[in-house]
Image (cartoon, rainbow, N blue to C red; front, side, top):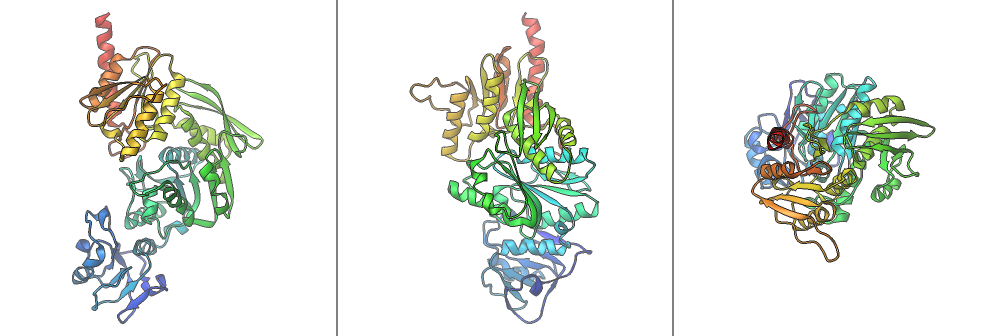
Length: 494
């Protein structure tokens, strides 16, 4: 985690001008060229920004109690949201030091989001897929995008692993500055609920916002459904006055936000009320054919990534791309050129005679979407693998996951690390549950017992760190190896 920003080319920032409403103590004005939010990393000449929670830096303590230590390490000023016992250097008392850190970090690199269109993708699910689709479409249209996604990052100079749920403000500023310096035409940014709750994007201006949909949230960061929705809505605080908003017409929560959008707005969805919509023409285990419609124009799209959730993500990407003047045929070509995404209904085909999909879904909503697709494709059983990586964060989520799997799968193979699924409710046929010792054993069991007509879904997959879109993940590779072994043994058994 990068908690400091230093550069010989950084723009000097006058703190009094950047924080005009701050209460200042100490004589003299401070011109900052670097900042740091971890007192252990402070170097002479830094401005120390005291954060109320240092969890990102591996500390549970309040950063304000270390202000004097930061000064002893050479900090020339302290920005804080509580009074601190510092008398040797000026202090600037602000209402929110996280916001101040973001504003200062962006100012030190010359406000790159004012020089390059930045597109933020928010919502509960589908953010990384929608971002990858937009990138593919923009590439088809001759544009060069920087990307900050959980699937992988590219700052115009180098690739790196996936974005964390709450990236630090200095790291975001540095990446954005690299994108501008390397000539990226646009920046694509995945915006999580956690990052919004911690004001990670303070100081950044978004040229466009696309919200996939808003359902049940991560209550590790929000203690209620309404709180979760309120935090998600904060993404609009970063939208430029002339910026465009893309909302899901099929999502009731998103439609409640229409009044909060003051500028241009486009809607997408499967219903007739959406401005950009699609109709499923054909749907198979290895592809689906869609008719994409925007006003009086339409285009056929054949995509190798299946599921209605992928159609929704494709529509979101299409609507965003249309707002940037990209024609519908280029949009269709961009969607088609994205043939796979790791852990997003990723089809594993080794000639086994039945579909096997690896997906990151671990929440009730996401599991419901992929199992619904599996059920439509199945002529036999739907076999679902859960365990270890698919564990929910709360008892309520675990129960909700168990209810979805029981209702929509025929057989659940669960690693022992996950609490066993409960029996089904009265009047409903519950999925049969097999408990095994590990996730690898669960995958082996699923692909070993499946027969033609069955569909196997390996849910809750977590990708290894990746350097670019398209790299393989652990579950996919394990599944390929197991299927290869299965294919060798079956002819022998016959």
